Length: 108
Image (cartoon, rainbow, N blue to C red; front, side):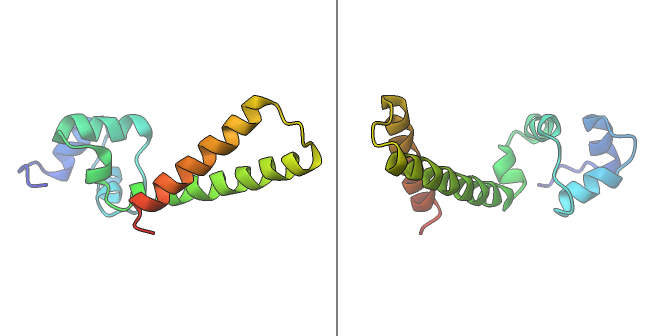
């Protein structure tokens, strides 16, 4: 994003003592802490997912993999304990639906 601000000026606005960390964020060599991600949003007026291209996809893949692991775990409980409580059945449904949504949004 073209603002005319130097990395040192952006660093100052985000509360960093130098431009080193901002440079690492800008080149995807490090991920900013959540609060700083929100500060970038406030500064540039764009969502962090637009400012840090690719991180959103990585996060979605990470969550999808964890959801799959939890789904397998809950389904194995269903086999060993056929009378699962309603909340477990609700979790299984929600996880399955969420996985479909993530995969559709990734074009899979």
